Length: 152
Image 1 (cartoon, rainbow, N blue to C red):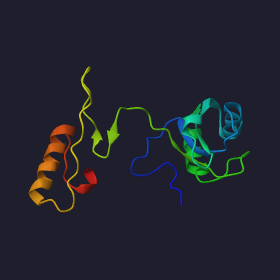
Image 2 (image 1 turned 180 degrees about the horizontal axis):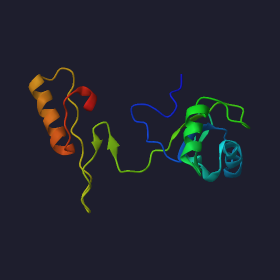
Image 3 (image 1 turned 180 degrees about the vertical axis):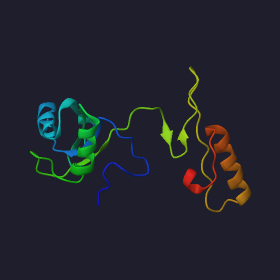
Image 4 (image 1 turned 30 degrees about the vertical axis):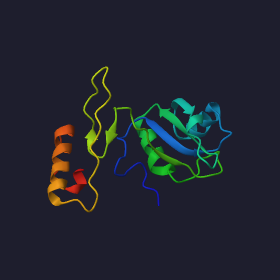
């Protein structure tokens, strides 16, 4: 089952949607035509570089209103849009906010220096003390609270 636009790392609602599973032959004009059935499309782009092994491609669509984009994410995800023959996955587009991970944003990079690396997570055989040191190093690097495993 599809969870329209929601999940552990779902992007916040916006007028921009990401569509996965478009047919290889689709172009920007056809993408606009298909999604104009759901509201005014301001801008769209087929992303050829995101081609999947099955030949399907993703695309981006920007609607004139948040309401139209929200409706499409909630109602078209996992379905077949008008004018296409196969189902697509639709979610809100992740806005570029810098590198993100399960623990939140990494500290900003210093110009001329490589970005900081996260320490490796300990393996299952490591002692609780080593696990605590690992959590503390993450807390110091990411400046976040690590109360439960769900936070990290």
